[in-house]
Length: 365
Ligand code: KG4
Ligand code: ZN
Image (cartoon, rainbow, N blue to C red; front, top):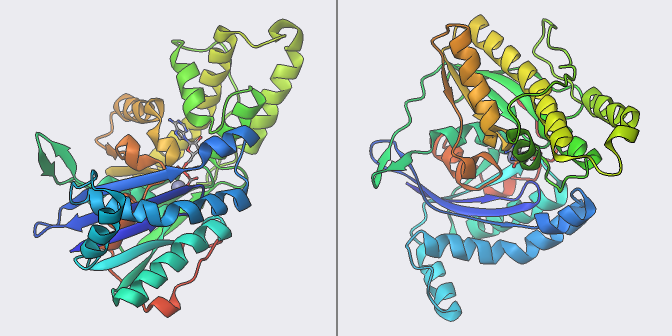
């Protein structure tokens, strides 16, 4: 089965062709993303109206590129491209689209495009939960030595979603049977990194920038608090950290000014990551122990962070636990359409195109 997947929940415009073969292996045949992040870098954050306007421009070209690339024919002239893309569309079995959560204007671009394709081509359509799809990026088969390998993820597992807008912990018994354990009470992990980056004068999105600065040093003498680290629940809270960093910079203004030096910046970034990651790791491992699961899946933009992945592994070793941790390949960790296709293929539940609508506040039911 072959799916054309569409993702437009935030500022990215993504389309992918994803296939499940006879052995159940998820293969990404193409994965195209257009981003308006350089536009948002100028304003230090996303302006929803601008994001949606850009997505309207990108949507069809991105779909055409994904269809053509799925057949390794990226070099066709533009006239031939459209003709060939239409031809490939006929071989697609179904369409998958992110229907929430996300920005309403952005979601509408993807959802309405997918509905139109479904109606015009008479193809089934599968609405996909963006956050669950982040975890399903782990089910995408890896290419090694030109062969696809199946990922050996076992149920039950604990899923930690760490993105720009969400931080959630879930317990999965099977694909369709899961339970939400907890989440952030205020800012998401990625949002905290982006806001702190802004205070530090780093470009948007700041998660990868903070990672780069922190990697320049071996360890930090600084320590920021990890909020709720000792609470019995599975909740998180990251907005206080931003205030703590802002206060620290204010107090150290004379020493740090006029610009924060490389070592100071590295120290701050290192301590910020440590404060956020410590609580994420502690609560995720506690959930895995409580639910007697030996598998942990990470997903979302922040899971692209190598320090987070390594610290998880280190913590598992230090605590002598036999747990397995999965995190998506970097290109599938941040927003992309391939993960939407992977989710749809493993949770194939088509609905009538008239029933699908964009749901900005979609939660976990
Ligand atoms: O999942 P995602 O692409 O979009 C949402 O669904 O929100 O996540 C974006 C978030 C941003 O906050 C960005 O700063 C963060 O992921 N991010 C990272 C890294 N790459 C992206 N955070 C830490 N380290 C990274 N390498
Ligand atoms: Zn996302």
